[in-house]
Length: 222
Image (cartoon, rainbow, N blue to C red; front, side, top):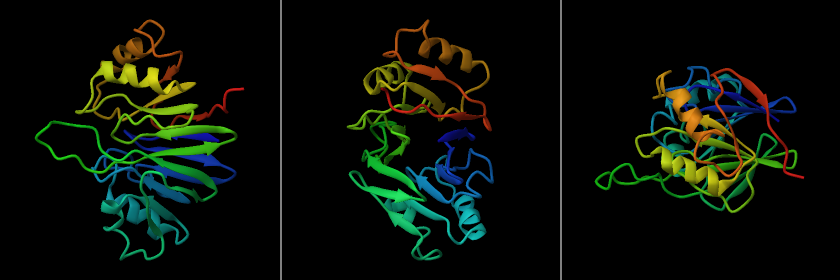
């Protein structure tokens, strides 16, 4: 399976001629979801869910389907009956040939005065390995993770929490997502803190991809 980094929190996964897109939000490219066979959305915040981008993908291909939580599904179901599926923690399903598990329940705390919304993460199996996108939470799935899509920067996090999250999940490799609010000056700072010269992240390789860059994902540990 291959991964293409898109803007901010969005990625495209490719395998056997089929494409799965996660979180094509307003900070990602306008066509980020177009051409997808399946789309997963972690939560309703606009940097992860853009209704126009999803509608464009669903209208472009009548076979495209969406899996997401209830608050997002309710905004699409009437227009695309039978193609929008509501999921929650503990669910497992097959989307366009990709095996997916749902982990997590709530968005990370932004501030105690701001109500928390539902957020789910997706573990996608591939070639004996697993890639995990947590959305806006530092969810630790109850299964090994080979490739972690790491929310490296957000209003709800600090770098110490990101370091500890990598230590706890212990992936083979972590690719940055949720980086749309970082300036170019920030990337080497985060790279140093999360790399071998930083405080230590449990042996994970940390990689930042430019939008549009495509890589092959590692398989499970031997």
